[in-house]
Amino acid sequence: MKLYSLSILYKGATKSNLLKAAYDLSSFSFFQRSSIQEFMTFTSALIVERTSQGTRASVKEQEYLCHVYVRNDNLGAVVIADTEYPQRVCFTLLDKVLEEFSRQVDSIDWPSGNPDTINYKALDIHLSKYQNPREADAMTKVQAELDETKIILHNTMESLLERGEKLDDLVAKSEHLGNQSKAFYKTVSVNDSPY
Image (cartoon, rainbow, N blue to C red; front, side, top):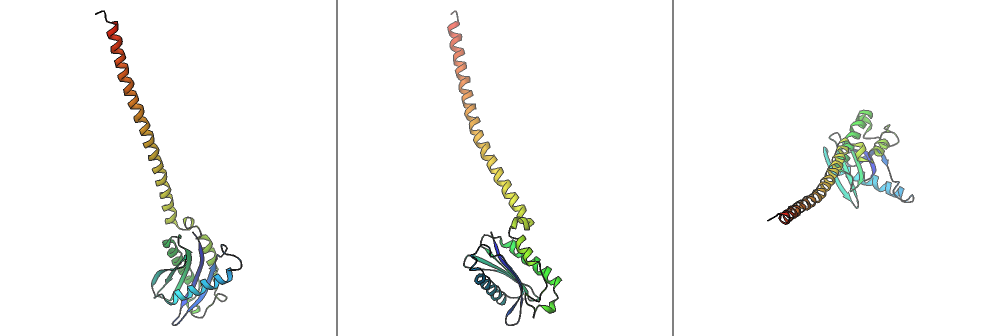
């Protein structure tokens, strides 16, 4: 599970405007990183331009999922992740980032701002924190713990069943020994009898 890009954009009348972005391209070759970053920036802008106000969407592009949220005030955000990353966590991240950004950056600066003029430094921190969805998101952490408990419980039940089968074998053997003992006792009793 990996997040590659987190961008905040303003959806203008004809095109979107990149306000701030963070990237984690460490899994790509050094020589490919600038091209991949340009592609992710272009894709993020295009997705925001084509997404209606007040809409959340996920768009598949090759082996990546681009999750977008454009608010009613035209402020939008895009996170690009691999297909394994939980969609709900992506939208939680987008909500959090947009809310925080709108409190720290005046809306007057959104239409004309750019990454150099916008003073918002938390994107890199959020991108890094959310690389592990279990640590960043409480619901995912609880779900992972529940899944782990279910696996342990399942393994324990299997162990009990195996143990139960072994106990059944012992009980069967014990009953067999009981019958042999009774037969031996009867045989001994008959032979020892004076009649």
